[in-house]
Image (cartoon, rainbow, N blue to C red; front, side, top):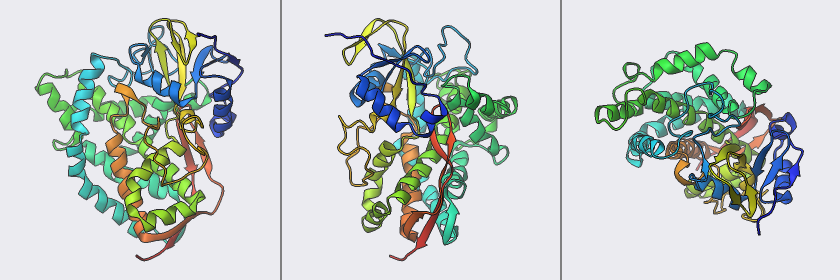
Amino acid sequence: MTTTAPRLDLDPFDDAFLTDPYPFHAQIRDAGPVVFLDSYRIYASARHAEVTAGLSDWETFSSAAGVGLEDFRRSKPWRPPSLILEADPPLHSRSRTVLNRALSAKAMAGLRASFQAAAEKLADALPDGKIDAIPDIAEAYPLSVFPGAIGLGPDGLENLLPYGSMAFNAFGPRNKHFETSMRDAARVVGWITAQCAREALAPNGLGAVVWAAVDSREITAEEAPLLVRSMLTAGLDTTIIGIGNALYALAANPGEWRKLRENPALLRPAFDEMLRFESPVQTFFRTTTRAAELGGVALPQDAKILLFLAGANRDPRRWENPERFDVTRKAGGHAAFGAGIHMCVGQMLARLETEVMLAALVKRFAGIALVGEPTRKLNNTLRQFARLPIRLTPGTR
């Protein structure tokens, strides 16, 4: 039987919500499979079954109108839309084929040795005792390997993180977080655009693989820089946040660190539990292409629906004891990377970076603990830390 969505007076972009979203996710889940949020006149879901169903059905729940609050059919986006994230087939299929090649398992295998060496070098250089895990590890490591892998030069890399902050804040309303992140937009966007040009990229990087698809006439010369831009946007910020969130979860649950030291083979599957427990990307929007239903709730055509990936990842209908962090949990099926044809194209790169960095740390340090209050960095889409004070205890195998 089709029902009407219950109405809730919640603002998913309010600071209280962004700071501690989990009680609000529970409120949304308990209200129904799909709810209507009066604050923005949008639909929303935080249950695993409905979130993954919405993410998987691109024909009904479209990305082409934008995966943020803004409807690209009614207003001009702040930058040219992504050909992968904000597109549906056939354009998405063509774009995905090229990015899949650039970010393939073979490409990742070619990067593994240098990425592992960089991770071990960073771990060996860390001082014993108190550090701030965000600048010292979570940011330092990806920034040491990712730009070069894409084919970027050494100049101007300070623009990468501000651009990612803009892009992910833009999926929400034009609130203070968006406005603050956009203060240096002209300089940052100009630099990013210049780096996506063919002549700016090293001939042996992942960006060059994208441009080679122009030569084979799979994509146009106008589309190539937008696909390189997609790698820059999606391949850095979320990996940094994933490493930071993983270190937080392990520091808050030091027994789980001991499990990884005792059995390093757990690291690869444990990454999924780290993503499930603290999802870097909290939400994405979709837009209905027709009158439809989700979870038995009626949705009109052209409705925006906010899918809470992080809410799905702690849904007790799907996970036993979802508030517990457990590196032995079989966490496959989480929604942190999305689902369906729009599942994160760069996930293998994120897995590689996180796995080798955590492996280097677990090998060198016997323990990890929080030694101060972490500080959140609020963003309309991302859940991340600005500061994460931890202590690493040295150890031997």
